[in-house]
Length: 454
Image (cartoon, rainbow, N blue to C red; front, side):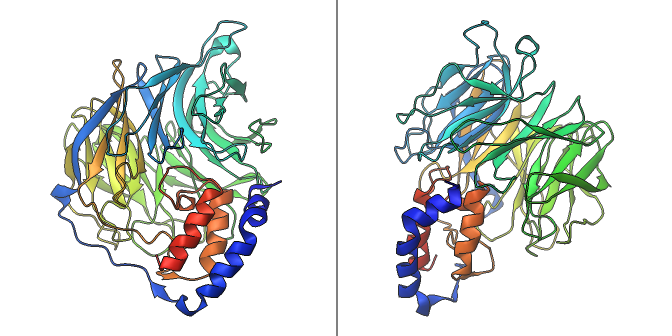
């Protein structure tokens, strides 16, 4: 049974009743965000130990206790680490899960890491992008949650990659099962690994994109209802846009200039409803962005300085103050800070404000770690004595209108269709209960948010 069929089967009647009871409230406007001084955006970091050299970070409620947890991909540690959240923004010490094949004894180095419910049991599973010549260069390691917050050991290895850089989980093939999409730098491909819906994966497909792809950002760039892929090309200094056909196939559309991009993030930074792209320009001490036109094309590349010698290496987009515009978060390698550049909503940004996050931040993920409704930030700090940190959002109490899934400023039944799309594609908007995971229980939470008007 597909993910969308599962939702309809479990919740379809309840949804109909809830929409009927709420039909008089179809034009409830999304709540306006309170203003917050940029200097108050984030507090001091709360740290927890991980394996050596964590380069990737993901979030999810892996033990189903209602608190958001952190998962890191540990490159030197050949492991993933699970740091349970306490519900107040603090983290417990990481539990290290080796990425070792017990038959051969060989291990794999982890880079990116994500959580998602791969088999529909309501528990967050883990996918790590890995590197291991000894194991025949697998692309991903899959760890299935056993329903207690523990994970299968040894992990299952799938796919092929000599240099994996960037990974996302969504239904790209249109069969209702979650797939894995990742960038394979040295082989110049974007790889699609189709999920079977039971936690296992089939044979992957390869899509050529020369220039050294080092990340993936996935969204519907041309508004045709299918998910597309943007990838930064580190060797050719470009961003390539690949259109998806809804069945798992990708076709390159265009390229845009970008200076030595080491990562990529997607979001709406000017509030026009179209997806925009941001990259870190490491050697230029800047971040660059291109605004989407909504038809698969983008405008000219623009640049913002992050300060001399700052070396921005990590990048993320998230709404720090709840005003509906995504703000730039740049990880500054030397200072150990995250620099937040608040969007003005018109394609311009306020001056960057730095917040300490830990030594050598390499990856970011957002989530509500203390239950106040505000976007907090988790970071993987790429030092050999590995740590992950959470910094709490000082603009707490900003309550996003979660039921407005399509972002049109009103809560209507069309948001149900948008939520099903988010569920099928494991998009952040799917998470309606704040546990960091996308599961069928989020439908009940969406209904509650819908009936509440936000």
